[in-house]
Length: 83
Image 1 (cartoon, rainbow, N blue to C red):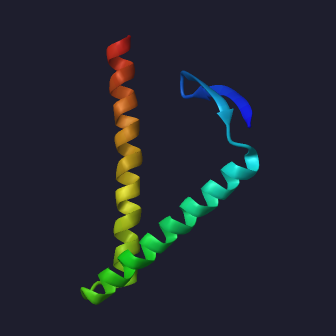
Image 2: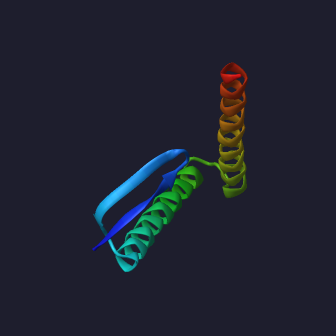
């Protein structure tokens, strides 16, 4: 175990007895595998519902872009009101 300090955005973070890099890599790998499995299940459900993979992927991309644009807008609004 190791002590880890750093920042997430502007917030200082300190983790005592944090997992080692190897443990964190295993956790990340497990999470990524679970996410891929969930995405594969969603694609199968969409196909069974008569939707094609291309429209599913296009919708996924548009939702991601909407999230990005929303974050940018939130930052701009916060910046204007903090001036």
